[in-house]
Image 1 (tube, rainbow, N blue to C red):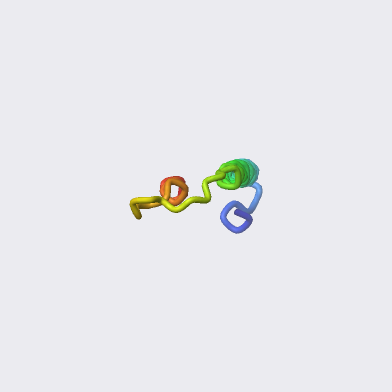
Image 2 (cartoon, rainbow, N blue to C red):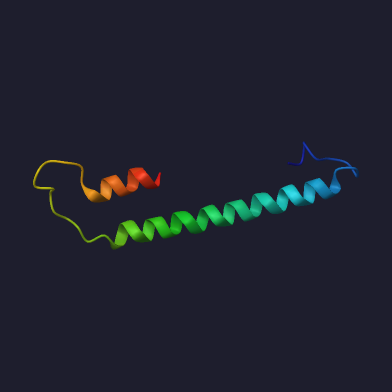
Length: 64
């Protein structure tokens, strides 16, 4: 961001890009925090009887 938006002409773009980058990081942090919490709360510790994909594994793959 510093290199792309340097100089007085790009000062406003620099400010907006920096703000957007910070908000994106905060949002990603919150989303992944919620994801970790959801995985940790899953109390399923049993093997799937028919040998199919465990629901938690399916959830993680879909989330990613």
